[in-house]
Length: 206
Image (cartoon, rainbow, N blue to C red; front, side, top):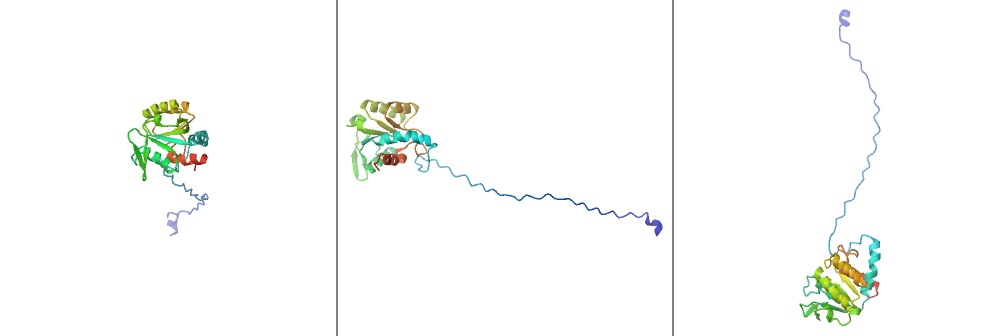
């Protein structure tokens, strides 16, 4: 038996390897809040101007506009679904002295009240004491602004969609105050329906 012992395969030696595993760093979970949903609306009251500098530069013109004792709305509409109606109604419901300008209608009904219109800014008795809101297409706005300048109206408020670059430049160059373009609290720029109450409060009328 001993003769064949050296011919038998030797059992493999057990070799133990000691490997030091690196310490695992604890995972830190960072929760990223969901991106807020964007809102795009003409009358979004939660929207804010892009910079305080813009607000500071145009709040003065807003105050000047609302300092006038009287107002006119060019493009006032008889249709409650139109912005021309909504803007005119805004003035009426705040007990402001306002004249609707609409050559195609004799009166506009707000609630139970029929308010007579005029056909042109030329029909307004006190232009120097009257600020004018516009809800008209840019070509009509430009021609009416030229008339307003000749008649001596001091300040204008151009709703979004009523002006292009030419109209905006003319308004800013020819009136004591022209509220229009970027700014205000509306998502599309200055709007009477959004910024008007703030303007009235600034001059003590609300």
